[in-house]
Each structure stands twice: as structure tokens, then as C-alpha cells.
Amino acid sequence: MDSDRSVPLITDSPDPPTPHAEATITVTRRRPTVSVLAEDVFHGIASRIMNGDYPPGSRINDRALAAEFGISRTSVREAMQRLERIGLVRMLPSRYTTVTEITDGMARATWEFAGLYASNVVYLAFPHLDSAGRDHVLKLIDAVVAQIDSRSEWLPAQIALFGYFTDHSGNDLYRCLLGDSWYLILRNLIVLGASDDVRERFAGGLAALAAAVRDDEREAAARAAREVFFRS
Image (cartoon, rainbow, N blue to C red; front, side, top):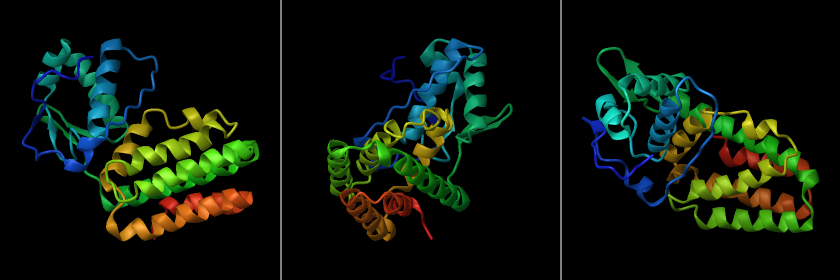
């Protein structure tokens, strides 16, 4: 897939928010589909939405996509239907496709889900962390804290932190549970960012997590991980 082609794919939309320009996150979760071409288009469009190249409310031109990828509009529609199923786009038949907005309810649900997920993987991983593993976690927490004021870098740092917990959770289901929905979760977190009104609580949760890791307090670590994301 060639992402450097210059075919315009968004119409009637504002410029992408500048915070996304500095960081690009790629998620690839392959699964069998009716069309291999539609699979490639799905991941390509989902990655662009997730990274802010297609901001909420923008229109996606399926004709331009078909031309860019050198495929039929039928394959593009297959990819769009899959994106619609996970909530990233809304298709208006015979009209156009738009990237979904992030409503207050969706924002709250995203933060809550992220908090519960983080709490669970921390709890499961704790018994599997030796001294070296805990030291590495503390370094990852420091890296997140260092990026707390950066809207473009805070999420990649968090993915590294909680991805490490996930990899050491001893539970493969947590690595495959979300499937395509990871795109929606990460898109929402990227757009929502670490805004000014949540940074203090965000930093407090990370400090509590670091303290629990140092003290080898499993329950406290799980609670702290939850509080990093939960919003009142």
C-alpha cells in the first residue's frame, strides 16, 4: 500500500488538527475477509482516521480511494462497511461517507473502557514481573510523565506502558480481544488527548502506579491504572 500518493481523499473538511502531525501510530490486526484488497483498504483508512489525517466530520471520497489503491469501488465499500461496524465512519447510501464525531457519551465510554482494560492487565501482569520487569515499568511510567504535556506523544508512551503489561499478563485473550475495535479506541484517545483539565489527575494516577510498583502492591497498582483513565 502506497500512502505517499497525492490523490485528495477528503472533501469539505477542515485541516487535520496539528497535534497529530508529529506522531503516527500503526495498528495491524489481520483476519480473513471476502476481499484481500478490501482488507488493505480497511487498514489504510482506519490508520488515517486514527492518526487524524481524516478528522471527525470529514467526508471520505470512495472514488478517490478506488483510484489511489487501484481497486474497484466495490472493494472500497466492503472496507467502509467494516469501518462502519466498529463505529469509525457513517455511510449514507448514494451520498457520501463521513468520519464519526466523538460525542460526550463516546468520550466517556472510551475513557472508562481504557481504565478498566488498563486495570485488568496490570492486575494480571503483576505476579509475572520480576525485579527487572518492575524497573522497566518504572522507566516506562517516567517516559509517559515526561510526555504529559505533549498531545502528540503522550498516547504512544502510554501504549508502550500498558502494552508491556498486556504482554506480561499471561492472558492471550487480552491481546486479541478487541480486534478491529482498537482503531476506534485509539482514535478517540488521540483526539481527546491529555487536556488541561485532566492532566493533574492523569499525573496523580501515574504517580500512584509507580509507587505501587515500587512497593509491590498489586491491588493498589490495578486501582492506580484505572484512575489514569477514568474521568468523573
